[in-house]
Length: 555
Image (cartoon, rainbow, N blue to C red; front, side, top):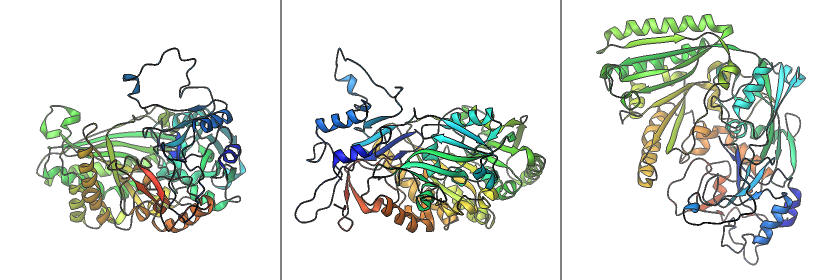
């Protein structure tokens, strides 16, 4: 298929692209066709300066096809070095155009020298009350969500319609990347993961065709898109999900403080984790943090309270009494048990009045972007948390070798995820989610622009800290949206026994590898020729991308 034909087949708002998690931006490593003459040679995706990189006239033709929406971003520092006057017009990401296409020059999105589509203006949340498809799976309505919508948009519409939609906690998270990775939610322990709610997906596949995927039409693609990761199978333009009745929740904030870097801190952390399965079984869900030295956050305070486990639980209205009683019993037992520990544990908690979950989540502030942070993570199940407290202690201590490091836990799985009724019977999300109790995340940072420190911290995170969690629950895995992109055993860690089928679907729907990222399904069929050191976030891999010798591009 020639370049001009490819342009004609693509809708104005949907170029070949891949999903960029959390920003609502889509990108794809450019895969313009190339005719290989003579002996077969490995195919490499074009880069500026290569013979097959489009000429300016070809970019102009593409821009004409897109009605002037093609933008060529410049490096952020360029204004410091060049001055251009009397420009006739300007087009920024805030333009009213439905979507804008951009060539990526400096790795701002998922792949260097790629094409990206800025989809934030593709907004819209449409509610269908009493949708029979939703009722079949326990909902009362459906919501059709455009690709550019973020969580605060979705929650706002849900709240106005007295509905509950399973979505992320961060108000600025986009629907696409969150969903294709699985999508955990503050209320997943009640309703299941985000992918468990999907009724239908509209997407543009690699040949530029807009298709509908549901349990009856294109069921293999439907299965793969629900958990198989972004940047891989197609460009999602809309998602239709289940909606449930309004759900009042009580927010229960807690803090358990003790002496900095003490044995009592570890007694507290281990006891807390052993109780998570019971709390989850009784409807408790939410987030917690643990750090042996919170002085960086708290400032100069009494050392007797600088080590802490703290967070917030969400207690659904229909199970509040049971959940609250379980928490009271837990804190009573903690107080009693801590009498035998070396140092005092100070227990404080506060329950807020009930509030509709959609309204509550719409008030959450959005996260920042661009920080120097790498995440390592692992899902821990019931047995890993309760079988052997000494093994648990050894593993968790290895994740806190630097006193001010933080462990972030998400109690967002449990019975709600294990027993979820899934449209079509199954989806491609990591099977270990079905047996998980807590999703443990280890955020690690380094000095800005310090590549050496970044490599050292990433290596230690991967080989020591995450490895300790893996040994604690070796048959589990990691949530790919919040995992280390340098994970060596990524196929098993991110998809378990679903990977083989996912690769088959990838090769069927995108045989030429138009959509590509690392580490994503099918990326092993390509090699990155990189001189830029360790990878960035998932999907952000610098260097030229070339097809492996035994997996040549079809021509």
